[in-house]
Length: 76
Image 1 (cartoon, rainbow, N blue to C red):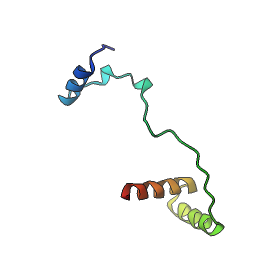
Image 2: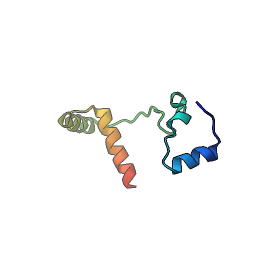
Image 3: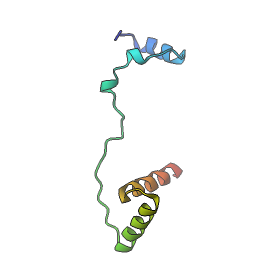
Image 4: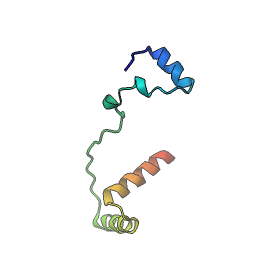
């Protein structure tokens, strides 16, 4: 991998050139996507409703909760 300056990298990117040879894909990170465990207590009727909707969609309860919360946060 040939090293270049940040300015050269930015210019190549802006010009639409292939910059993949200048990127170490193995050490890449996606900030703010590290999982963090959160415990939430729901009443039984909510859990039942979540399970019914998750089953209808063919996904897990956890996936449903993540989708719904992500949608709500995008709206905010």
